[in-house]
Each structure stands twice: as structure tokens, then as C-alpha cells.
Length: 323
Image (cartoon, rainbow, N blue to C red):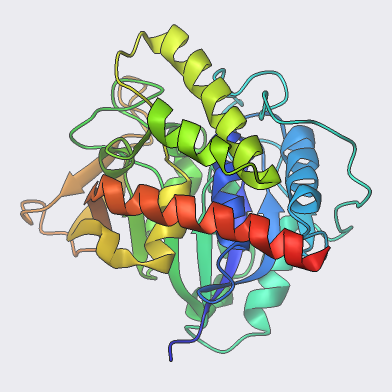
């Protein structure tokens, strides 16, 4: 029997972060959550912290500690996303959480937890700009040996970027942090927009999820529907459904066989304003740089959506049993 991944989830909720967290909460057999860290990204840091606490409480997971982290990129000004609304999770039934974030900064939590763990033992699930992890690596390089793998959502090759023609949001928001993470010497799994954009939560899927009647299922269906409407209006998409960007990181941790991957060298552009944050993917070794990442470039959408559906319904069952 395989032991669950021991995971720190670094997030910036965000609609898709919310679904990713619910998927992780529903999967204790595969994912042991050591803590949740938040950073500025989709919305300012004060809101990502608030949203993480609210989502934990909504799912009956207030026992999981939340650590607030960096409130801006390492070197560049913040440029938050505009598709997640004022709160970051517009469409979610907002409330004031009864719990508070831990007083320890997210970077300090990462350093403390990693240094106190065996080598190659902890997975970093990064579904936000990578400022927290990069700062932890800068401050305490010894933590790198403790990291088993870094599974992140970010980058694009065939689809182009979703915030500039060249870059995806999580990388563009703090490209210098992403460059540090990709270059840290630990195994990196980059779940790209190429793969995530194949997995669309369409109206039929959302309707079936909503019909289950569970509190989690209905809330996530409403949240995704709201996100898709804003996204469709902004970009003029004609496809049926919203992509499941951040949940694909959790899905990969649960079952990598749902995805298609290829080893590559990946470098992050940090100089050109035209292509700032671009993930430069070298499959063929033409740069003669060593392969430093597993590039996840495709997915089986039906199987990923089936997994998401089953786990969200499972979380509702967990809650029903607990009460």
C-alpha cells in the first residue's frame, strides 16, 4: 500500500484554487496536508489568506493550519488577476471564518517543516505564484534536500499564455521566483496550461454535480459557473466549460496516469518585457542544458473530470458522516 504524499499546499484562492483544495481535502488516502500557505497572486495577500481559512472551515477542515505569506513578488510590482472577481472567489457563499491564520509566516513554516523532515520526504504543491517557496529556498538552501518533488501549475507551450501571449499567470506574476524554483535542483513537475485547458467543466458536468445536492458539490458548481461566465466575457471563448487549472495539480498527485508528460529542460524568461515569464521548454536538448522538469502537456479529460466528480461527492459524504 502506497503511503500518502506529505504535502504543503501553496495557494492564492482563486476559483480554481478553491476546487483544488476541496479535491485535496477529499483525498486523505493520497494526500496528507501538512499545512496550507498563501501568497499574493489572483488577489492581494489579505484576501488569499481570508479565502483559504473560509474554504477550510466550509469543508470541515479548520484543523488544517493556514500560514499567510508574501504579499508581493520578489522584484516586480504586483499585477493581480481580474477574472476571479473582487473577493477572488466571487460566486462562493462568503462568510467570516471563525479561525485565524497562524502567526508564523508561510516562509518560516516551510523552512521549519522541511528542516524537521527527512530528506526527499515532502511534496510542495504550488498552485500560486512561487514567491513563498523561492524565498524559503533563498533564506535556507538546506531545505532543498528535504523536498521530494515540486508539483506546480504553470507554463504553456502549445496554447500560449493566459496573461500575456507568452506567459501563464502563476509564472508571470513572479517570474524570478519561478526561475529559482525550476533551478533549485529538486524534481519539478510542471502541470502546464496545455494539459489543463484540455479538461473543461462543461454545463452538463456542472449540472450533474449540482444535482447531487451536496453542500460542497453545489458550492463548487456555482463557483465554477461564475468563473466561467466572467472568463467567457473577458476572452470571448466559445468552448463549453471552464478549465480546471489548479485542480489538475491535485489530480496528478492522486493519479499521474491521468496525464501525459515528457522530461525537458525548462527555463524562465526574466529579462525581456515582451516574453517575461515565458516557460522555455527544450524537449530536444538543443540548448544542451540538463533536463530539470517533467512537463505535463496533455490529459485524459474524461478521467480527470470523473475523479473530480467522485471526490467532491465523497467530501460531501465525509461531512454528512461527521455531522
